[in-house]
Image (cartoon, rainbow, N blue to C red):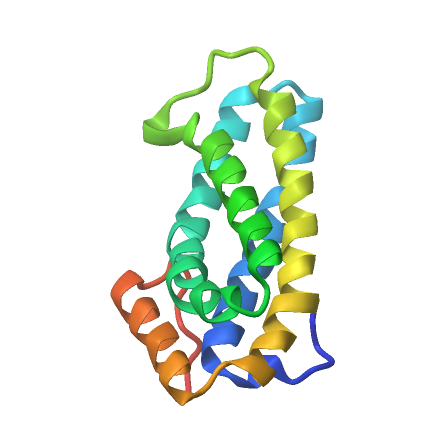
Length: 158
């Protein structure tokens, strides 16, 4: 995904981008399961995606987005609405459940397609914009949220 603006040189953005990459990797496992009608496998992958997105979304919504909302209120509100929709669909597979709703597999696939587009909006729009928008205090706030939330992926060595 994003490689052109240099935003990945910031640890906070690099970690968010690595999480995006992992989510995209996990989404790729859904299509074969969907084609096979393997709803339990889809539910398992949905739980894996949710595990990555939980802390990721909180870092964005409590760290990055507040700093961006003043300059880009409509865009940030739209991204937050997309977070809610994805969370709602993924939550139906929480707690080890296989959703009994017969339309859930299709809803999941639609939500994941939207999520892929959402990731591109963040990486091609939000992440480069934060380079020009956030000051030291705001980056410290982002780092504090990440420290509190942790993450689902191991941090790179170094």
